[in-house]
Image 1 (tube, rainbow over the protein chains, first blue to last red):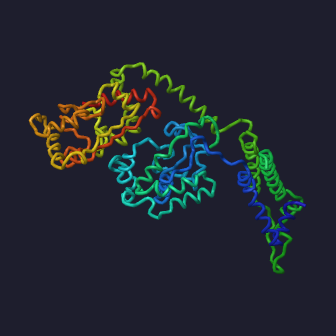
Image 2 (tube, chains in turn green, red):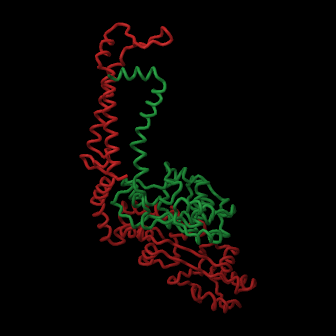
Image 3 (cartoon, each protein chain N blue to C red):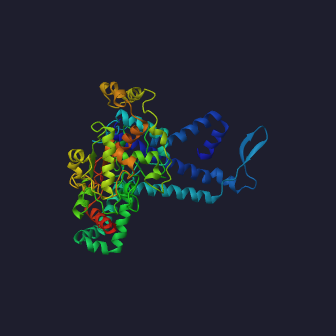
Length: 211
Length: 298
Protein backbone atom coordinates (compact mmCIF):
# COMPACT_ATOMS: atom_id res chain seq x y z
CA UNK A 1 0.00 0.00 0.00
CA UNK A 2 1.38 3.41 -0.91
CA UNK A 3 0.03 6.88 -1.54
CA UNK A 4 -0.43 6.21 -5.25
CA UNK A 5 -2.69 3.23 -4.62
CA UNK A 6 -4.77 5.25 -2.19
CA UNK A 7 -4.91 8.04 -4.68
CA UNK A 8 -6.14 5.69 -7.36
CA UNK A 9 -8.85 4.35 -5.10
CA UNK A 10 -10.00 7.86 -4.24
CA UNK A 11 -10.04 8.91 -7.87
CA UNK A 12 -12.30 6.06 -8.81
CA UNK A 13 -14.69 6.43 -5.89
CA UNK A 14 -16.42 9.80 -5.59
CA UNK A 15 -18.01 9.05 -2.20
CA UNK A 16 -14.65 8.17 -0.71
CA UNK A 17 -13.11 11.26 -2.29
CA UNK A 18 -15.73 13.55 -0.74
CA UNK A 19 -15.21 11.96 2.65
CA UNK A 20 -11.44 12.28 2.27
CA UNK A 21 -11.65 15.95 1.39
CA UNK A 22 -13.96 16.66 4.33
CA UNK A 23 -11.63 14.79 6.68
CA UNK A 24 -8.50 16.59 5.55
CA UNK A 25 -10.10 20.02 5.65
CA UNK A 26 -11.51 19.31 9.12
CA UNK A 27 -8.07 18.71 10.64
CA UNK A 28 -7.31 22.44 10.98
CA UNK A 29 -10.61 22.97 12.78
CA UNK A 30 -10.07 19.96 15.01
CA UNK A 31 -6.75 21.42 16.13
CA UNK A 32 -7.63 25.12 16.29
CA UNK A 33 -11.34 25.42 17.03
CA UNK A 34 -12.54 22.33 18.85
CA UNK A 35 -10.22 22.59 21.91
CA UNK A 36 -11.08 26.26 22.45
CA UNK A 37 -14.78 25.37 22.60
CA UNK A 38 -14.19 22.89 25.39
CA UNK A 39 -11.58 24.79 27.34
CA UNK A 40 -12.50 26.79 30.43
CA UNK A 41 -14.28 30.04 29.58
CA UNK A 42 -12.53 33.40 29.76
CA UNK A 43 -13.31 35.12 33.06
CA UNK A 44 -13.99 38.87 33.14
CA UNK A 45 -11.18 40.87 34.73
CA UNK A 46 -11.90 42.48 38.10
CA UNK A 47 -13.02 45.82 36.67
CA UNK A 48 -14.92 44.48 33.66
CA UNK A 49 -18.68 44.85 34.06
CA UNK A 50 -21.66 44.63 31.71
CA UNK A 51 -22.56 47.85 29.92
CA UNK A 52 -25.18 50.09 31.51
CA UNK A 53 -28.33 50.77 29.50
CA UNK A 54 -26.91 54.06 28.19
CA UNK A 55 -23.54 52.51 27.33
CA UNK A 56 -25.23 49.61 25.60
CA UNK A 57 -27.27 51.95 23.40
CA UNK A 58 -24.11 53.93 22.70
CA UNK A 59 -22.29 50.75 21.74
CA UNK A 60 -25.04 49.81 19.30
CA UNK A 61 -24.80 53.30 17.76
CA UNK A 62 -21.02 52.83 17.54
CA UNK A 63 -21.71 49.64 15.58
CA UNK A 64 -24.41 51.25 13.43
CA UNK A 65 -22.19 54.17 12.44
CA UNK A 66 -19.36 51.80 11.55
CA UNK A 67 -16.87 53.32 13.97
CA UNK A 68 -14.96 50.04 14.10
CA UNK A 69 -14.19 50.41 10.41
CA UNK A 70 -11.61 53.04 11.32
CA UNK A 71 -11.04 52.55 15.06
CA UNK A 72 -9.67 49.39 16.62
CA UNK A 73 -10.25 48.41 20.22
CA UNK A 74 -7.25 46.23 20.91
CA UNK A 75 -3.83 47.18 22.15
CA UNK A 76 -1.33 44.68 20.84
CA UNK A 77 1.58 43.57 23.04
CA UNK A 78 4.08 45.67 21.09
CA UNK A 79 6.35 48.29 22.64
CA UNK A 80 5.09 51.25 20.63
CA UNK A 81 1.45 50.44 21.32
CA UNK A 82 1.99 49.90 25.01
CA UNK A 83 3.80 53.23 25.30
CA UNK A 84 0.97 55.00 23.51
CA UNK A 85 -2.09 53.16 24.81
CA UNK A 86 -0.94 51.56 28.09
CA UNK A 87 -1.35 47.87 28.90
CA UNK A 88 -2.09 45.39 26.10
CA UNK A 89 -5.63 44.09 25.66
CA UNK A 90 -6.69 41.20 27.90
CA UNK A 91 -9.22 38.57 26.83
CA UNK A 92 -11.20 39.14 30.03
CA UNK A 93 -11.91 42.75 29.05
CA UNK A 94 -14.02 41.60 26.11
CA UNK A 95 -16.36 39.09 27.74
CA UNK A 96 -19.34 41.47 27.62
CA UNK A 97 -18.69 42.54 24.05
CA UNK A 98 -21.15 40.78 21.76
CA UNK A 99 -19.97 41.06 19.10
CA UNK A 100 -16.45 42.14 20.03
CA UNK A 101 -15.26 45.34 18.36
CA UNK A 102 -11.53 44.70 18.25
CA UNK A 103 -11.45 45.90 14.66
CA UNK A 104 -8.64 45.30 12.22
CA UNK A 105 -7.76 48.74 10.91
CA UNK A 106 -6.67 52.04 12.38
CA UNK A 107 -7.49 55.02 10.28
CA UNK A 108 -8.19 56.76 13.57
CA UNK A 109 -6.60 55.85 16.90
CA UNK A 110 -7.37 52.82 19.01
CA UNK A 111 -10.28 53.54 21.34
CA UNK A 112 -10.07 50.73 23.88
CA UNK A 113 -8.58 53.12 26.48
CA UNK A 114 -10.15 56.39 25.38
CA UNK A 115 -12.53 56.62 28.36
CA UNK A 116 -11.92 59.69 30.51
CA UNK A 117 -9.05 60.81 28.31
CA UNK A 118 -11.28 63.62 27.08
CA UNK A 119 -14.15 65.37 28.80
CA UNK A 120 -17.77 64.66 27.83
CA UNK A 121 -17.99 68.13 26.36
CA UNK A 122 -14.98 67.54 24.12
CA UNK A 123 -16.45 64.25 22.91
CA UNK A 124 -19.72 65.98 22.08
CA UNK A 125 -18.10 68.79 20.14
CA UNK A 126 -15.81 66.34 18.39
CA UNK A 127 -18.56 63.93 17.32
CA UNK A 128 -20.77 66.69 15.98
CA UNK A 129 -17.89 68.29 14.10
CA UNK A 130 -14.39 66.85 14.53
CA UNK A 131 -12.82 69.84 12.78
CA UNK A 132 -13.98 72.13 15.59
CA UNK A 133 -11.29 70.71 17.87
CA UNK A 134 -8.91 68.82 15.58
CA UNK A 135 -8.49 71.02 12.49
CA UNK A 136 -6.73 68.37 10.40
CA UNK A 137 -9.07 65.52 11.34
CA UNK A 138 -10.47 63.42 8.49
CA UNK A 139 -13.14 61.84 10.66
CA UNK A 140 -16.69 62.30 9.33
CA UNK A 141 -19.09 64.49 11.33
CA UNK A 142 -22.06 62.87 13.04
CA UNK A 143 -24.42 65.82 13.66
CA UNK A 144 -27.59 63.72 13.65
CA UNK A 145 -26.56 62.00 16.88
CA UNK A 146 -27.52 65.17 18.69
CA UNK A 147 -31.03 65.19 17.22
CA UNK A 148 -32.08 61.57 17.63
CA UNK A 149 -33.35 59.91 20.78
CA UNK A 150 -31.16 57.04 21.93
CA UNK A 151 -34.01 54.72 22.91
CA UNK A 152 -36.37 55.69 20.09
CA UNK A 153 -37.20 52.02 19.45
CA UNK A 154 -38.06 51.70 23.14
CA UNK A 155 -36.23 48.40 23.17
CA UNK A 156 -33.21 48.87 25.41
CA UNK A 157 -34.70 46.53 28.02
CA UNK A 158 -35.18 43.88 25.32
CA UNK A 159 -31.57 44.20 24.25
CA UNK A 160 -30.50 43.75 27.86
CA UNK A 161 -32.82 40.78 28.27
CA UNK A 162 -31.26 39.11 25.23
CA UNK A 163 -27.80 39.63 26.70
CA UNK A 164 -29.01 38.37 30.07
CA UNK A 165 -30.08 35.17 28.36
CA UNK A 166 -26.56 34.87 26.93
CA UNK A 167 -25.13 35.08 30.44
CA UNK A 168 -24.50 38.78 31.10
CA UNK A 169 -25.18 39.32 34.81
CA UNK A 170 -27.93 41.94 34.51
CA UNK A 171 -30.40 41.92 37.37
CA UNK A 172 -34.11 41.99 36.56
CA UNK A 173 -34.27 45.29 38.40
CA UNK A 174 -31.63 46.82 36.10
CA UNK A 175 -33.61 45.68 33.08
CA UNK A 176 -36.87 47.04 34.45
CA UNK A 177 -35.49 50.48 35.09
CA UNK A 178 -33.37 50.60 31.90
CA UNK A 179 -35.91 52.59 29.89
CA UNK A 180 -36.20 55.14 32.70
CA UNK A 181 -32.40 55.35 32.98
CA UNK A 182 -32.04 56.44 29.37
CA UNK A 183 -35.23 58.51 29.13
CA UNK A 184 -34.60 61.73 27.25
CA UNK A 185 -31.05 60.78 26.27
CA UNK A 186 -29.94 61.60 22.77
CA UNK A 187 -27.81 59.26 20.72
CA UNK A 188 -24.95 61.65 21.38
CA UNK A 189 -25.37 61.24 25.15
CA UNK A 190 -25.40 57.47 24.76
CA UNK A 191 -22.33 57.17 22.58
CA UNK A 192 -20.38 59.54 24.83
CA UNK A 193 -21.37 57.36 27.81
CA UNK A 194 -20.09 54.34 25.89
CA UNK A 195 -16.81 55.98 24.89
CA UNK A 196 -16.18 57.15 28.46
CA UNK A 197 -16.67 53.56 29.65
CA UNK A 198 -13.74 52.29 27.56
CA UNK A 199 -11.06 52.24 30.21
CA UNK A 200 -7.90 50.45 31.03
CA UNK A 201 -8.42 47.70 33.55
CA UNK A 202 -5.83 48.57 36.17
CA UNK A 203 -6.45 45.30 38.02
CA UNK A 204 -4.62 43.34 35.33
CA UNK A 205 -0.88 42.92 35.68
CA UNK A 206 0.43 43.94 32.26
CA UNK A 207 3.23 41.37 32.46
CA UNK A 208 0.68 38.58 32.84
CA UNK A 209 -0.53 36.80 29.71
CA UNK A 210 -4.06 36.31 28.51
CA UNK A 211 -4.33 38.31 25.32
CA UNK B 1 -12.60 17.41 29.15
CA UNK B 2 -9.41 18.28 30.98
CA UNK B 3 -6.84 20.68 29.72
CA UNK B 4 -4.19 17.93 29.36
CA UNK B 5 -6.45 15.97 27.06
CA UNK B 6 -6.74 18.87 24.63
CA UNK B 7 -3.05 19.55 24.84
CA UNK B 8 -2.31 15.99 23.74
CA UNK B 9 -5.12 16.19 21.18
CA UNK B 10 -3.49 19.19 19.51
CA UNK B 11 0.02 17.74 19.69
CA UNK B 12 -0.90 14.31 18.36
CA UNK B 13 -3.11 15.60 15.55
CA UNK B 14 -0.43 18.05 14.50
CA UNK B 15 2.36 15.48 14.49
CA UNK B 16 0.20 12.84 12.78
CA UNK B 17 -0.70 15.33 10.06
CA UNK B 18 2.95 16.21 9.54
CA UNK B 19 3.89 12.54 9.39
CA UNK B 20 1.04 11.80 6.98
CA UNK B 21 2.05 14.65 4.70
CA UNK B 22 5.63 13.42 4.72
CA UNK B 23 4.54 9.91 3.83
CA UNK B 24 2.25 11.05 0.99
CA UNK B 25 5.01 13.23 -0.43
CA UNK B 26 7.63 10.50 -0.22
CA UNK B 27 5.34 7.85 -1.54
CA UNK B 28 4.21 9.94 -4.50
CA UNK B 29 7.79 10.29 -5.66
CA UNK B 30 9.59 7.18 -4.54
CA UNK B 31 7.23 4.19 -4.41
CA UNK B 32 8.75 1.38 -6.60
CA UNK B 33 5.74 1.44 -8.87
CA UNK B 34 6.08 5.16 -9.35
CA UNK B 35 9.78 5.04 -10.09
CA UNK B 36 9.35 2.37 -12.74
CA UNK B 37 6.68 4.45 -14.40
CA UNK B 38 8.79 7.60 -14.28
CA UNK B 39 11.49 5.90 -16.34
CA UNK B 40 9.12 4.88 -19.12
CA UNK B 41 8.70 7.10 -22.13
CA UNK B 42 5.07 8.30 -22.41
CA UNK B 43 4.14 6.77 -19.09
CA UNK B 44 0.46 6.51 -18.31
CA UNK B 45 -1.55 5.64 -15.26
CA UNK B 46 -3.40 2.37 -15.12
CA UNK B 47 -6.74 4.05 -14.68
CA UNK B 48 -8.94 4.05 -17.79
CA UNK B 49 -11.92 6.35 -18.09
CA UNK B 50 -14.71 6.05 -20.63
CA UNK B 51 -13.13 2.99 -22.32
CA UNK B 52 -10.01 4.63 -23.70
CA UNK B 53 -9.03 7.77 -21.81
CA UNK B 54 -5.80 7.45 -19.88
CA UNK B 55 -4.10 9.91 -17.61
CA UNK B 56 -0.44 10.77 -18.08
CA UNK B 57 1.57 9.09 -15.34
CA UNK B 58 4.71 11.14 -14.96
CA UNK B 59 5.48 12.31 -11.43
CA UNK B 60 5.57 16.01 -10.59
CA UNK B 61 8.94 17.80 -11.02
CA UNK B 62 11.49 16.79 -8.43
CA UNK B 63 12.03 20.33 -7.17
CA UNK B 64 8.47 20.21 -5.85
CA UNK B 65 9.59 17.36 -3.68
CA UNK B 66 12.46 19.38 -2.25
CA UNK B 67 10.16 22.33 -1.68
CA UNK B 68 7.62 20.19 0.20
CA UNK B 69 10.37 18.49 2.18
CA UNK B 70 11.91 21.79 3.27
CA UNK B 71 8.50 23.10 4.34
CA UNK B 72 7.98 19.99 6.45
CA UNK B 73 11.41 20.32 8.02
CA UNK B 74 10.78 24.01 8.73
CA UNK B 75 7.46 23.11 10.41
CA UNK B 76 9.16 20.58 12.65
CA UNK B 77 11.95 23.00 13.58
CA UNK B 78 9.37 25.72 14.30
CA UNK B 79 7.34 23.43 16.54
CA UNK B 80 10.50 22.51 18.47
CA UNK B 81 11.50 26.13 19.04
CA UNK B 82 8.17 27.95 19.46
CA UNK B 83 4.88 27.16 21.21
CA UNK B 84 2.46 25.18 19.03
CA UNK B 85 2.31 21.58 20.21
CA UNK B 86 -0.28 21.79 22.98
CA UNK B 87 1.24 23.06 26.21
CA UNK B 88 4.82 22.56 25.03
CA UNK B 89 6.38 26.02 25.16
CA UNK B 90 9.18 25.33 22.69
CA UNK B 91 12.92 25.28 23.33
CA UNK B 92 13.22 29.07 23.13
CA UNK B 93 10.48 29.58 25.74
CA UNK B 94 9.23 32.45 23.56
CA UNK B 95 6.08 34.38 24.38
CA UNK B 96 4.76 37.75 23.30
CA UNK B 97 4.63 38.76 27.00
CA UNK B 98 8.31 37.97 27.50
CA UNK B 99 9.20 39.87 24.37
CA UNK B 100 7.18 42.87 25.50
CA UNK B 101 8.68 42.76 28.99
CA UNK B 102 12.21 42.65 27.52
CA UNK B 103 11.55 45.54 25.18
CA UNK B 104 10.00 47.59 27.97
CA UNK B 105 13.07 46.94 30.08
CA UNK B 106 15.39 47.99 27.28
CA UNK B 107 13.23 51.06 26.73
CA UNK B 108 13.43 51.92 30.41
CA UNK B 109 17.21 51.48 30.41
CA UNK B 110 17.56 53.86 27.47
CA UNK B 111 15.10 56.50 28.54
CA UNK B 112 14.97 56.12 32.34
CA UNK B 113 18.19 58.10 32.94
CA UNK B 114 17.10 60.77 30.47
CA UNK B 115 13.82 61.15 32.31
CA UNK B 116 15.69 61.43 35.59
CA UNK B 117 17.96 64.07 34.09
CA UNK B 118 14.95 66.22 33.21
CA UNK B 119 13.68 66.06 36.78
CA UNK B 120 16.87 67.52 38.29
CA UNK B 121 17.02 70.47 35.88
CA UNK B 122 15.25 73.71 36.65
CA UNK B 123 12.63 75.19 34.38
CA UNK B 124 14.81 77.80 32.69
CA UNK B 125 17.39 75.12 31.83
CA UNK B 126 14.67 73.01 30.29
CA UNK B 127 13.32 75.95 28.32
CA UNK B 128 16.79 76.68 26.94
CA UNK B 129 17.20 73.11 25.68
CA UNK B 130 15.80 73.01 22.16
CA UNK B 131 15.66 69.23 21.90
CA UNK B 132 13.71 68.92 25.12
CA UNK B 133 11.33 71.66 24.02
CA UNK B 134 10.71 69.75 20.79
CA UNK B 135 9.86 66.69 22.85
CA UNK B 136 7.57 68.82 25.01
CA UNK B 137 5.84 70.16 21.91
CA UNK B 138 5.18 66.62 20.72
CA UNK B 139 3.84 65.70 24.16
CA UNK B 140 1.54 68.70 23.98
CA UNK B 141 0.40 67.59 20.54
CA UNK B 142 -0.38 64.13 21.82
CA UNK B 143 -2.08 64.91 25.11
CA UNK B 144 -3.21 68.54 25.13
CA UNK B 145 -3.80 69.68 21.56
CA UNK B 146 -7.12 67.88 21.16
CA UNK B 147 -8.65 70.55 23.39
CA UNK B 148 -6.21 73.46 23.50
CA UNK B 149 -5.18 73.23 19.85
CA UNK B 150 -1.77 72.43 18.35
CA UNK B 151 -0.72 76.06 18.80
CA UNK B 152 -2.08 76.11 22.39
CA UNK B 153 -4.35 79.03 21.52
CA UNK B 154 -7.51 77.31 22.68
CA UNK B 155 -10.46 76.17 20.61
CA UNK B 156 -14.19 76.04 20.17
CA UNK B 157 -14.94 78.74 22.77
CA UNK B 158 -14.55 76.05 25.39
CA UNK B 159 -10.89 75.29 25.85
CA UNK B 160 -8.68 78.09 27.16
CA UNK B 161 -5.90 79.79 25.26
CA UNK B 162 -2.59 78.92 26.96
CA UNK B 163 -0.54 81.57 25.19
CA UNK B 164 -2.18 84.66 26.69
CA UNK B 165 -1.85 86.28 30.09
CA UNK B 166 -5.11 85.07 31.62
CA UNK B 167 -4.90 82.00 33.82
CA UNK B 168 -8.25 81.11 35.33
CA UNK B 169 -6.73 78.73 37.89
CA UNK B 170 -3.50 80.64 38.36
CA UNK B 171 -0.49 80.95 36.11
CA UNK B 172 2.45 80.14 38.37
CA UNK B 173 4.47 77.01 37.65
CA UNK B 174 2.95 75.40 40.73
CA UNK B 175 -0.61 76.26 39.63
CA UNK B 176 -0.11 74.92 36.11
CA UNK B 177 1.54 71.77 37.42
CA UNK B 178 -1.43 71.19 39.73
CA UNK B 179 -3.93 71.87 36.94
CA UNK B 180 -2.31 69.24 34.70
CA UNK B 181 -1.89 66.73 37.50
CA UNK B 182 -5.23 67.00 39.27
CA UNK B 183 -7.46 68.52 36.62
CA UNK B 184 -9.93 71.32 37.33
CA UNK B 185 -13.69 71.45 37.49
CA UNK B 186 -15.32 74.85 37.06
CA UNK B 187 -18.96 75.49 37.78
CA UNK B 188 -20.59 78.82 37.20
CA UNK B 189 -24.19 78.88 38.35
CA UNK B 190 -26.89 80.07 35.96
CA UNK B 191 -28.83 83.15 37.15
CA UNK B 192 -31.84 82.97 34.86
CA UNK B 193 -34.05 81.92 37.76
CA UNK B 194 -32.83 84.61 40.15
CA UNK B 195 -32.37 87.59 37.80
CA UNK B 196 -35.10 89.23 35.78
CA UNK B 197 -34.42 89.72 32.09
CA UNK B 198 -33.73 93.41 32.76
CA UNK B 199 -31.23 92.49 35.43
CA UNK B 200 -29.59 90.00 33.04
CA UNK B 201 -29.23 92.72 30.42
CA UNK B 202 -27.85 95.22 32.92
CA UNK B 203 -25.43 92.65 34.27
CA UNK B 204 -24.28 91.92 30.72
CA UNK B 205 -23.67 95.65 30.28
CA UNK B 206 -21.67 95.70 33.49
CA UNK B 207 -19.47 92.79 32.35
CA UNK B 208 -18.91 94.46 28.99
CA UNK B 209 -18.00 97.75 30.73
CA UNK B 210 -15.62 95.91 33.03
CA UNK B 211 -13.90 94.16 30.15
CA UNK B 212 -13.29 97.57 28.52
CA UNK B 213 -11.55 98.59 31.72
CA UNK B 214 -14.13 101.17 32.65
CA UNK B 215 -15.36 101.85 36.15
CA UNK B 216 -18.63 100.18 37.07
CA UNK B 217 -18.96 101.52 40.59
CA UNK B 218 -21.72 103.93 39.64
CA UNK B 219 -23.85 101.41 37.77
CA UNK B 220 -27.17 100.67 39.49
CA UNK B 221 -26.69 96.95 39.00
CA UNK B 222 -23.37 96.93 40.90
CA UNK B 223 -24.94 96.01 44.28
CA UNK B 224 -26.46 92.91 42.68
CA UNK B 225 -23.04 92.09 41.20
CA UNK B 226 -21.50 92.44 44.64
CA UNK B 227 -24.10 90.15 46.15
CA UNK B 228 -24.14 87.46 43.46
CA UNK B 229 -20.89 87.52 41.51
CA UNK B 230 -18.16 89.01 43.70
CA UNK B 231 -17.64 85.80 45.69
CA UNK B 232 -15.85 84.25 42.71
CA UNK B 233 -15.06 87.22 40.47
CA UNK B 234 -14.13 89.68 43.29
CA UNK B 235 -15.74 93.09 43.78
CA UNK B 236 -13.38 94.71 41.31
CA UNK B 237 -13.85 91.86 38.79
CA UNK B 238 -10.27 90.68 38.85
CA UNK B 239 -11.29 87.09 39.57
CA UNK B 240 -10.11 84.50 42.05
CA UNK B 241 -7.79 81.80 40.75
CA UNK B 242 -8.34 79.70 43.89
CA UNK B 243 -11.99 79.26 42.93
CA UNK B 244 -11.45 79.36 39.20
CA UNK B 245 -13.38 82.61 38.94
CA UNK B 246 -12.09 84.30 35.79
CA UNK B 247 -10.82 87.86 35.59
CA UNK B 248 -13.57 89.99 34.02
CA UNK B 249 -11.49 93.14 33.59
CA UNK B 250 -9.94 92.12 30.28
CA UNK B 251 -11.54 91.26 26.96
CA UNK B 252 -10.75 87.56 27.27
CA UNK B 253 -13.95 85.58 27.70
CA UNK B 254 -13.58 81.84 27.30
CA UNK B 255 -17.15 81.25 26.16
CA UNK B 256 -17.29 84.18 23.76
CA UNK B 257 -16.86 87.96 24.17
CA UNK B 258 -19.94 89.06 22.29
CA UNK B 259 -23.01 90.33 24.09
CA UNK B 260 -25.15 87.28 23.37
CA UNK B 261 -22.53 84.82 24.65
CA UNK B 262 -21.95 86.80 27.83
CA UNK B 263 -25.66 87.06 28.51
CA UNK B 264 -26.05 83.34 27.91
CA UNK B 265 -23.19 82.64 30.33
CA UNK B 266 -24.79 84.75 33.06
CA UNK B 267 -28.24 83.27 32.48
CA UNK B 268 -27.39 79.58 32.03
CA UNK B 269 -24.04 79.23 33.75
CA UNK B 270 -21.08 77.26 32.45
CA UNK B 271 -19.36 74.04 33.35
CA UNK B 272 -15.76 73.57 32.40
CA UNK B 273 -13.64 70.54 33.01
CA UNK B 274 -9.96 69.88 32.64
CA UNK B 275 -9.22 66.15 33.08
CA UNK B 276 -6.54 64.98 35.52
CA UNK B 277 -3.43 63.69 33.78
CA UNK B 278 -1.52 62.25 36.72
CA UNK B 279 -2.12 58.66 35.65
CA UNK B 280 -1.49 59.31 31.97
CA UNK B 281 1.70 61.37 32.29
CA UNK B 282 4.74 60.86 34.51
CA UNK B 283 6.56 63.57 36.45
CA UNK B 284 9.07 64.13 33.66
CA UNK B 285 6.38 64.61 31.06
CA UNK B 286 4.41 67.00 33.25
CA UNK B 287 7.54 69.02 33.99
CA UNK B 288 8.38 69.30 30.30
CA UNK B 289 4.83 70.38 29.51
CA UNK B 290 4.85 73.06 32.22
CA UNK B 291 8.19 74.32 30.90
CA UNK B 292 6.90 74.45 27.33
CA UNK B 293 3.61 76.12 28.22
CA UNK B 294 5.22 78.81 30.36
CA UNK B 295 7.85 79.41 27.68
CA UNK B 296 5.28 80.05 24.98
CA UNK B 297 2.88 82.32 26.79
CA UNK B 298 3.03 86.06 26.84
